[in-house]
Length: 181
Image (tube, rainbow, N blue to C red):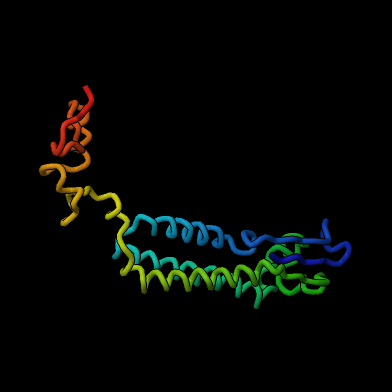
């Protein structure tokens, strides 16, 4: 995220490159937690979706804040690494820095963090209106008015499999005779 060019002879190396993880170690856990929250949304109920949406919004805001802080106060983010490389702490190493380059990845992280925050807010506001994933897996007998549920007398799909294992045909309504011998 940040590349610092040091004066010749100031340290063993003249280029110090720092990744986002080196600049702020909390960035990776924030992003992993947001990913886990997004995956949990696929199986969450309505109330839990609202909570997850709010949590994802906070995580996105945190990621955006980290990127904004790196972009706006770059010197504070590389000072420790320069002090470590040169052995000079405080303002003594300011004269040794020739140039500082901030990667476009910082701006991309800021944009993506903001989008993650907005998506989390959208889930928190609208997530309660989504259909629950559990309905897809409910038995047909649990669905009132389902014509296929009434084809078995008081049974569900599991009862149909049990009847099939016993040698009965659960789809046979008895309306006609089987022409096969």
